[in-house]
Image 1 (cartoon, protein in one colour):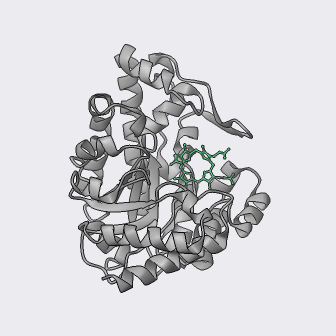
Image 2 (cartoon, helix red, strand yellow):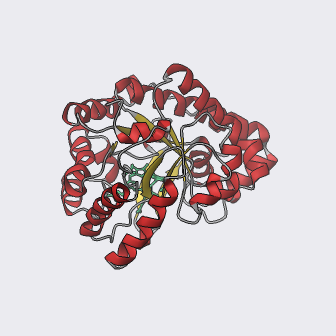
Image 3 (spheres, protein in one colour):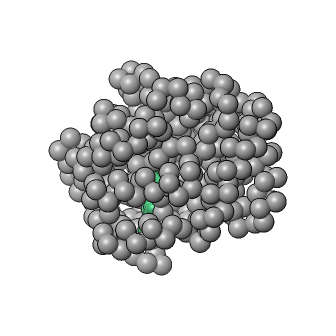
Length: 345
Ligand code: CP3
């Protein structure tokens, strides 16, 4: 397993082809996923069911031939165990309650013990690892800022008003919440690694809404702490750091001891290569999978060739695959990345 192309690319070693996986690869675009999801009940029920979550995790390996599986779960899974109720309301997205507003509210949040409170996630990992012997399993967590934004807003937001004003006006509350989330995320990821995941991705999906100055001051130290502790405890487990719309943060994130920087489609790979010496993950626009095959092929070729200039490259979409995507196009993408990346080496 140590020599699988994804792990080699993460470490910056040469590979025979560019490995590929897709964010949200086990999701609604797959008919089989929708069938299993209907059987499970709600989305969170599916996350809590180790047998079904493992089955769903493995689907894209067979259906589209990706080089790695990513644990089927959600960034809200540990948040729920902090004592916050999560509901997915159609047309509105996630709704979190109660909304955190005071230092006292933060004090009332629990720090889940993964081995007890999240044992179903660790059980899911063990089942997957029993079946998946030839490819890596990716674990993940949301990062403190992205989680804090939902906890303070109570759901999705366009302007991040609650998160930003808390950050600026109420440093005691911000610090208390970020400190707590830092512990939660560190222990959650560490437990996933102990249970068997081969690499982890930290989703700080919304960090790009912050200026570089605010990010450096209010967010970066927390992510750095998580990464430093993980690297000390698990030096051989690669870490991917990902956020959308965050090309202005690449230089500061290059100071993290992570192995891979994930890019969305807005950031050109050469732009990133001037600003980071890490391996690169990404970054085809998810909407490209609705274009003609010829277009997909051209875009893949460009990304693969640019990726060869990085110390290592893991192909991915720039964000999650859209639910309306034709599964055949996802399969075509994986085949095309494999074929073209062998040709151009
Ligand atoms: O890449 C993966 O497949 C790993 C699993 C994963 C999911 N969501 C599965 C999922 C990961 C890493 C996430 C990330 C996530 N989840 C974020 C970070 C932002 C991002 O997209 O990068 C956030 C904010 C969430 C919370 C969440 N979960 C939202 C906003 C939604 C969509 C809600 C809606 O109304 O559509 C979900 C649902 C979700 N998470 C699905 C999947 C496969 C769809 C589940 C379903 O309805 O069957």
